[in-house]
Image (tube, rainbow, N blue to C red; front, side, top):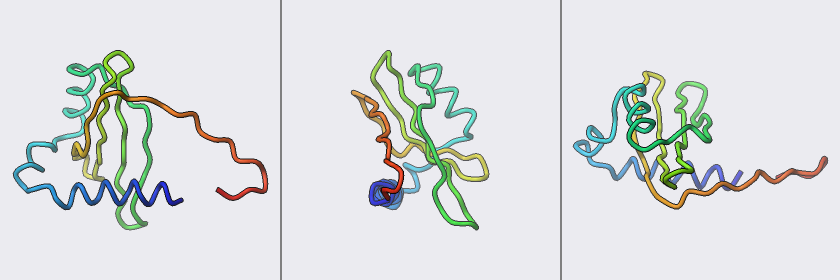
Length: 105
């Protein structure tokens, strides 16, 4: 739970400090943003989930390429607008830890 809250805080914090001009440059129609990630960076969707509350939910996605090692994090609104909130290199994955029955994470 702490991990989810931390990640959400980081993502929302990065959006809060983004200037409107920068937001316009880093946002677009989801299909266009995804096509750019696939065609220009060989990235594919590797993880994602929903964040928010019952009235407004945003989709968080991680796109990455094993070939190039790059990754991109997107936030997508219900209206289909995706914004790049982070990019990087040296992407890696970590297997999910199996939680023993009766143990709360």
